[in-house]
Image (cartoon, rainbow, N blue to C red; front, top):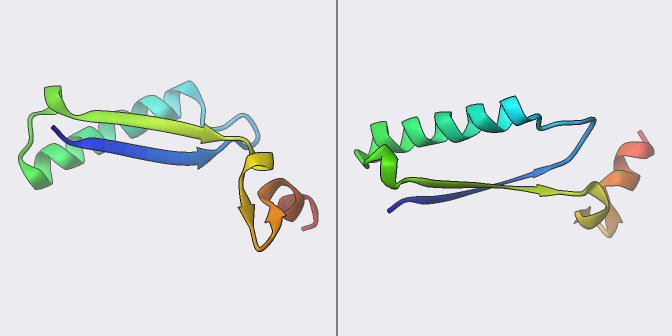
Length: 68
């Protein structure tokens, strides 16, 4: 059973419900095509990370984006 975990930051209202549905469908299709796995057995989980909870170079992504 393939288990795919996607992690994205929450930014400007995205990803939307529609975008997440497309990600789940697209990744499931891709795994089925490439690995020949049954779509019904493919698990896709999307973790949304608040920008305050994600850091790079000792700064939160939120502070990096705000400084640009």
